Image (cartoon, rainbow, N blue to C red):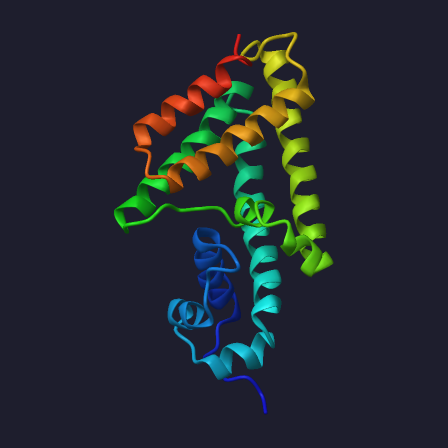
Length: 200
């Protein structure tokens, strides 16, 4: 029997990702996923066969959306290298601020998944998605750091790879710290302090 026309797969994946990114795989129930997506359990499993399959598809969708958002900022040559990094940090903080108004942290599906190594062992697709996302993330940050060295906004002696790891660590740390209820202004200060060692 065919899937109902009213079933919006992309909307379901986005709704599932919104739950997984806050609660992680283990602590997100099928009931939560159905409620968030506005679909019945039978419809969910007809489309995705299992919670594991839904997780993998939602993770792929999540990293794709964020990769595209990140790429727009990283490629904006109207901004200096340092400004691009600040915009990325501010986007994270703004997302956390908006989520806080709804009574929770925004979370991050990638961070949640990285902190649950059993997920990588459970399905090799998860490992592939996470590894590819990390490579592309670091490549993008390295490019911006090199651009910043050329435009003078980032220290000329800053190592691009080490700097990229620093930026990725600060962003992940912001996500985890936000889960602990830290106010956005303090998150902003943490971000600025994290970037300070790279700036000219």
